[in-house]
Length: 59
Image (cartoon, rainbow, N blue to C red; front, side, top):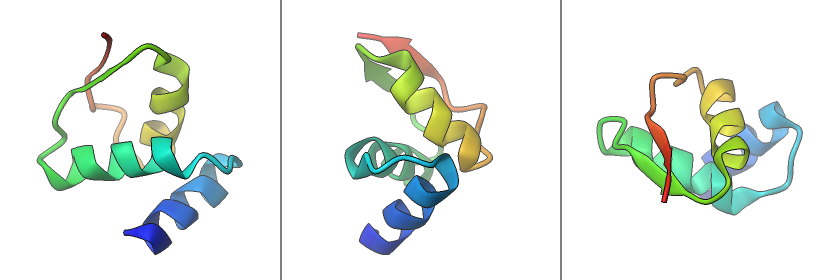
């Protein structure tokens, strides 16, 4: 999982492994919705992962 998060960070040109890990956890759970206060921080890695269909909502 850590390696996959690093790959996603590299694709997204960021170092935020937490956001990448959240996106990967959503993918692992059938693209489960993500609740966050920072929509952009999650939508960007989701798009880089090719998963623009992940529902990202403000918590």
